[in-house]
Length: 245
Image 1 (cartoon, one colour):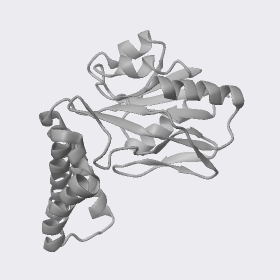
Image 2 (tube, rainbow, N blue to C red; image 1 turned 180 degrees about the vertical axis):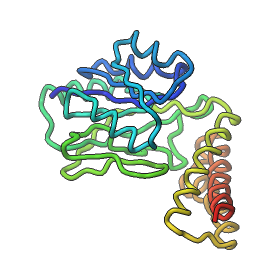
Image 3 (spheres, rainbow, N blue to C red; image 1 turned 135 degrees about the vertical axis):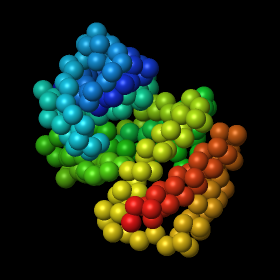
Image 4 (cartoon, rainbow, N blue to C red; image 1 turned 120 degrees about the vertical axis):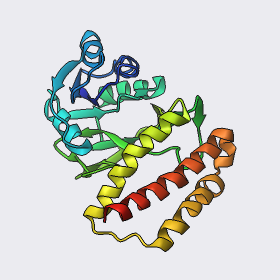
């Protein structure tokens, strides 16, 4: 079982080394870059990755194109701000020796936010299919929240995929602006109407669900920030969609 790790990048010099250095269990690493102006591609090449440059075509499309460049059918797709934990790396080594029983595997994702590991707030375990046989699976999603669609059996690994998210609230706000625009474009493309009532009601409900029902209060001040940001994300997504319609 030979695995190719794939990453899509744009100006990720801050994260790329950590991500690539965690991929020792992979036969090769393919980095598909879409025009970085920093040292991302230089660092990736120095760390042994095969760098391919191509224009940006959307998240799912870009990840499928990265997989198409792989020498192997088994793909481990991670983002530049992610890294395998030692436990997950060991689990993948074991899987390689024993051979896969499934066509794809989900990984639990553990996020670090403002320097704290988040165990609640709806953020954990946040399982995602990231290890898959490209003959049985493909990335789907035209705008945001892309995912792997599997035509086969799905197994589950237990080691954490570490996700290093925002180091500051200003960084979170900058990221949120980009993603809420994409989410709004998706709503508009589906011709989904956003009523004033929905715009007013869903943000506070999102805060309540995140902070109370999903026990965000157990994540300290960072959990409070997550709940507020989740509510703001919902408001901005719907407000932008109404403005675009």
